[in-house]
Image (cartoon, rainbow, N blue to C red; front, side, top):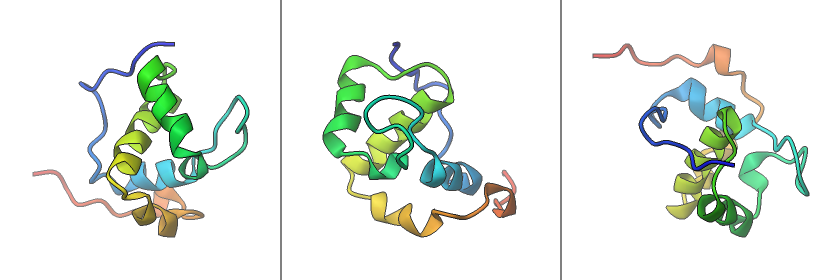
Length: 93
């Protein structure tokens, strides 16, 4: 496992990314199949300390850590079950 790089992290204002994060499931381990937002905070903190897996799951867990660390997971809950393809993002400046 490798610590996720912060350089290419998605911007939290990207609604498709937030919907994807709200609906992502843990693909392995004790919590396999659970929504990432339902993972215990201690488990997410463990990944932060030990290193995130490579790829999208590592990016999602890194973002989830920042959200949980700031007590904002309640903002993701209404997005569970939504299709990210239906999100309307603002055009970039």
